[in-house]
Amino acid sequence: MMYLDNAATAPVRREVLEAMWPYVTADFGNPSSHHEVGEAAARGLADARETIAAALDCRAAEIVFTSGGTEANNLAVKGIALAAPRGRHIVTTAIEHEAVLASCDYLRRHHGFEIALVPLGDGGLVDPHALAAALRPDTTLVSIMHANNEIGTVQPIRALAEIARAAGVPMHTDAVQSAPWLRVGLRSLGVDALSVSGHKLGAPKGIGLLAVRGSVPIEPLLHGGGQERGRRSGTENVAGAVGLAEAIRLRSGARSGDSVRRSRDSIIRGVLGAVPGAFLTGHRDARLPAHASFCFPGTSGEAVLLELERRGIVSSSGSACAAGSDDASHVLVALGIDEDTARTAVRFTLDSRVDEADAARVVSAVADAVAAVGSLR
Ligand code: PLP
Image (tube, rainbow, N blue to C red; front, side, top):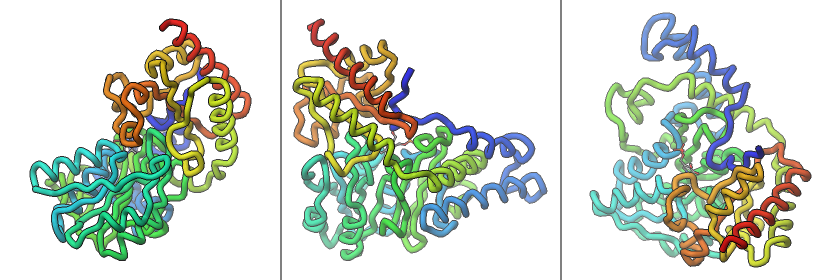
């Protein structure tokens, strides 16, 4: 079985589990407790925060641990918008993760915010001039993802953040999909807030973080014991935080994505050559190194996925949330792809071990799977 759905979730790394082990066994304490057992846990949490801050180009006090990417995006969008609104106007895009779009929609329904969507260019790219044109004196927040989970398009975040900064508007970026592959940092990207999720990086599900500049006020979503400097109450997931720190540390020391990029390019070239009518979704060049996503017009994406699985290849339609549902992807529809064609989407998200031989196997399995689905119609 070849697992090519790493954007949905990636396996937990052995080193990560080993780093976590002491904090679910001997050092199991509550980090708020003032005895030795609690203090050992508090030290583990503090060390994890320091490691992550160094990797994400921010201060330890600027890390807020959350239950994952969804909570980090909710905290960023609602927390920043509600804390110090210059007005009730938010600028985002139509291809954000549901956690951003639904948070914006909540602010619209319950707090009277207006949500503006920046028009998208080639392959879903946001042009900095288009962002500049969307900003208003009452814009309170810009939220634009670093890399898209369905189409792999990587936005020019630094340039976009400069536009927001020049206008004095806080900028959040969802770096959940970029963190496993690209250098992400709060100050190096020039953003004010950045979301990361552990389970895309080789840490377990249920841990993530929002890095948020100390100068940006944020209204908490969870109220209680005042943990995480009052920004996220609840006893901290110490083992999860330690695992996330180890995953981020391993990631920072890793090689660039050059070899996986070659395998991805072989898959893209091979599939486009072998399957008549197939097209790539997202941007050809500005895309994540391990991401190949296609539409196969005239088929059904779900049927192709089943045929691929019968041939030992596990992939997805593009979004784990949409998988199994009959709804066309909001991302593909926002790119101007019609709903029927959007339902033919298949996404391969590789890991760094996928080599040229694997890529050739994927191409021939895709050609066979699409042919098998076509012959059923
Ligand atoms: N943002 C993006 C771009 C994602 O791909 C995901 C996960 O699918 C999330 C946010 C949500 O992260 P989590 O699963 O940790 O809640």
